[in-house]
Each structure stands twice: as C-alpha cells, then as structure tokens.
Image 1 (spheres, helix red, strand yellow):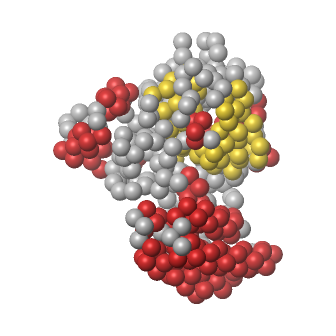
Image 2 (cartoon, helix red, strand yellow; image 1 turned 180 degrees about the vertical axis):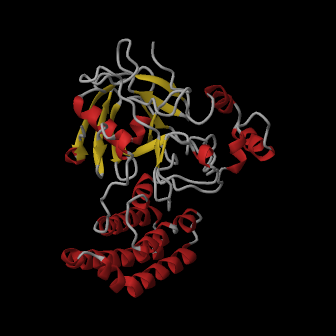
Image 3 (cartoon, helix red, strand yellow; image 1 turned 90 degrees about the horizontal axis):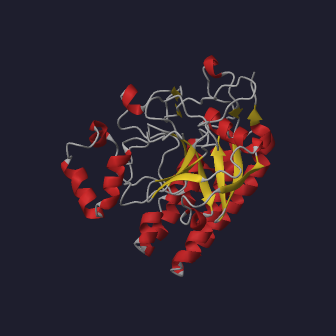
Length: 372
C-alpha cells in the first residue's frame, strides 16, 4: 500500500480547503490569523520572495565575494521598475550598476584564483558591454529586449561567481556515511508523457537529498513510475515504486534506504538534519533552497517521521495567490533539492494520468560520491 507522504508542512485537508477559497478570502484569513492555522503561520516571513529559479540558484552558490553578489542583486532589483515601466528610474538603476562595476572591478578580479583572473577580466568586459546594451533597451523602452539582455548579463555574472565556488561539502554527520552524496550540481532531463522537464539538482546545499535522487535516477529507479499524487496549485508527486514497497530497497541490505530531512539556512555553519525550523525556533528563517518558485523539487517524508524519506519526491506548483511568498509553510518542514529551469509548460500539463518515462542525468553524474 503506497505511503501517503502527506507531511508537506501542514495537513492536506487544510491545503485543499485553501484551494477552494478565493484568493481574497485566503488573504483575509491570513490577516486575521484564524485559529485553525498552525501556530507558526504568523511567524513566517512575508514579502516578495525571489521566484526566478536561475536567481535562486545563483544566490545559493557557496560563494562569498560580496562585491560580485551586490552587482548581481543590483541588476536583479531592476525588476520592480521594469514591471511598472518606470524607464527613468530603470536607467538610473543601471547607471548605479555600471558605477558599481567600475569601482569594484579590481577587487572582484583580485578575489579570483590567479589562473582565472584573465578569464574574469574577459567576462567583466562582456558584462560592461551588456550593461551598455541594457541602457539602449531602456532608451528604446524595449521591455522584452531588456529582459532577454538582462538574462544574458546575469548569466555572465553567474559564470564569474562559479569561479569562486567553495566546492567543499558541508559537514555531514557520520551516521549518514552509508548514503550517497552529490558534490556540486547536476542537471537532469525528466522525460514525461507530456514532454521534457530540465532541472538543476543542488548538492552544494542538499548533498544527501540530491545524492539520493541522482543515484536513483542513474539506476533507472524512476523510469516508468506514475505521478501518484497531484494537487492543483500545490504539488505533483512521484517516486512510489510499483509493488508493496514504498521506497528504494537497497539490494545489499534488503532494507529501505532512508534519507534524513536536510535543510541549510543562510549564515548557519551547520546543516539541519531531521529538525524542522519549528524544532529549532527559526520561525522567520528562509532556507538557502526555498520553496519559492514553480517547479521546486522537494523530498517527501511521512506524517510520522522526518527521516523516512526514501525515493518519493514532489514538484512544488507555486501559485502566488494560493502559496504567498514566505507563507507556504513548506519551507523548513521539507527539503528542497533543486529547481526546474526549463519545461514549465509541460509541468503545468502533468497530472495523475501521466508518468515519468525516464530521468537522464545529462551533466554532473561524475559528482556523485558513493560511500561504504
């Protein structure tokens, strides 16, 4: 009998109740603090979460060069002016970004490994050229052209940040030594009956969860499995094997392999294992890998335990009105381990009548580490 894996931050019944309410009523309920919501609700952060998976993946890189990070955030912050078509303000913001690049260029290059400094100079030259193009887009009031050019510029900045990555895995408790782990990132293509999804799986911040997923993908474990649970605006879940088992059974031990709940918090030296944000009093925290965008990959566990996730995973179906930023109640209770970066149209078509045809690891398979 398949395990329900309904522990996704709050009860399924409450969640389904949310889906039947109109968006304005949901907002009203959150404002007045109705008694049946979990106590943690009022303590969770509010505001506009970053919803771009590429931006989340840039932010979650283990990289500490603040000048470069500030440059990234300055450029990303142009979104508000762009949405409102405040072209003058947008132009001024770009000038600040150009000034920041000019003033901090030497510091950024000096922070690079010696062998990469020449490459960094070339990338920074390209970024400077891109910023000039962005100014032209502003003068032409070309919104779509601005978005496309900014995406390219941010990709160049991401390439710079990648040169500074500290690729050492965070400390992992010895009790989990038998589990595979992913040292870095991997890219997968999830082939489904509706089309293909491309996702980036993050082993920098969720090495055990990402490692289990990549390990099972390489084994072909997910091939042919159905999406056994689908809730509109909430989740799409798979990974329940055919037959009586509810997870991956290790052929060596003949036991179901369990992956602990694994969550990293910004500026915290140690990863949380088998502890929710509520357990440690982090009611206002946002994890390094948040459930903040359509297609966030999450690891499922049961109502009864935090450490019994084995193979089942879900795709978070972010909908701004029904899962408001900072109020989704999944952050801190489930582990995110990656993001869909392409195929969103396919994701929106998938349901319980569909299945995973195959998961291909197209990049990063060599980063999977198997332990004894």
